[in-house]
Length: 168
Image (cartoon, rainbow, N blue to C red; front, side, top):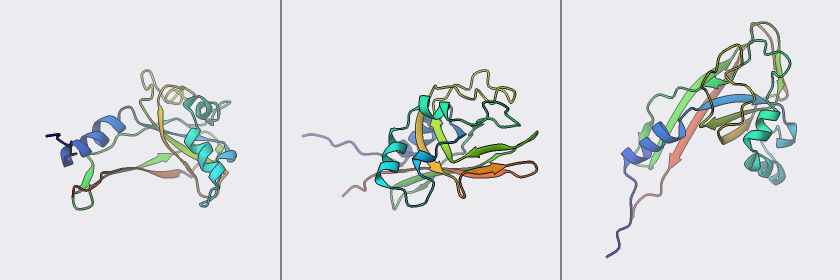
């Protein structure tokens, strides 16, 4: 008799809490070709799906002057499980805050796991431009391209969801 593996709620929670959130960072890029509307074309969706860390890092803002910009290291709390819908969710609000001048323009937020955070400091933008990691998702910002200046801040909610097929 063949056993069919099932995902328990603890395994699902562990995937988000341990695997997806390992060295999780969020950073800003300027890449309008990825689409900046809520209704992207298929071509724009494909470009987002095929975006590599090398391409994202090359488009990361702050190359000339960081002005307080740095990658945000996302420290997620434990995920919330909805056992009825077989869904685990983990969210965290993060803030990009300029300190000495404008940040931008930027069009998208990239969330990546497995990023190199060793030696990351505010002075180096938490390893701004580093290509280590795997992109989890890329999302356009509202009113892109966006520029923020002190005392403004840009709030973004990192949202990780993991759904599994209900057992029958």
